[in-house]
Image 1: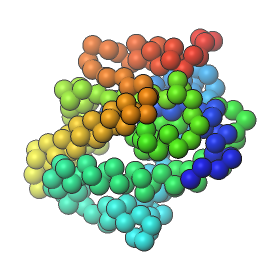
Image 2 (image 1 turned 180 degrees about the horizontal axis):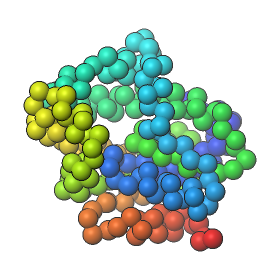
Image 3 (image 1 turned 180 degrees about the vertical axis):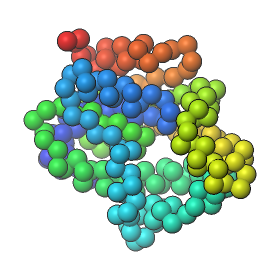
Image 4 (image 1 turned 45 degrees about the vertical axis):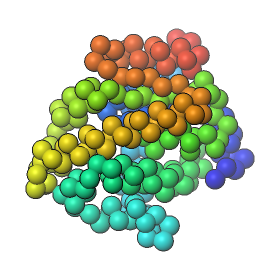
Length: 214
C-alpha cells in the first residue's frame, strides 16, 4: 500500500479516526477551518467507493451494496461487526487512490472510521498527529437516536427496534476493537461522553497535535 507519495502525505497528515457519532467530523471541520488544512472526509466518498466495489476484490463491500437496510440490520451484531472490519480493510485501497490526487505541499486532515489504527500504522504518520475518538455506549445511543437519517433507515426495517439494537451493539464492538488497535500501536484514544463538550475535545486534540492558535 505504501508509496513515496503516500508516505510523504501521511508524514504531514493529521488523522482523526474512531467510532461513528463521536464528533470526528466536527473536530476535523474546526481544525480545517482554523488552520487551513485540506480536509478528506472518508464518508463523503463512500457511495463512490461502493459503486467501484467488485466481487473479486471487495466481496464484503460488493455484497452490502446489493443489500436492503432490512437485510443489513436484521443480522446479528457480531456478524455486522466482523463485516464492518473487513469492509474497511477492503475499502482502504480506494481511499488511498483518492489521496494520490492530493496536493502534498500542505498538511491534510484525514477523518473517518475507515482510518483504523492498524491501517494507519502502515504509513509514517507522526504518533502525536493521530487520535481516535470512542463514545461511551450511553453517549453513542443518544446522538444516533436524534439523527433524522437514522430513522429513515430504520423505517425500512421490519423490526426497527431490533435493527437499532443490532446497530448499536455493532458499533460498541467496533469501538472496542479500535481502542484495542490504538493501544497496541501506541495511539491516543479520547473517550467521548456527555460531560465533555466538543470545544473541550477540540482543545485536547489541538494541544496533542501541537497546533498553535491563530
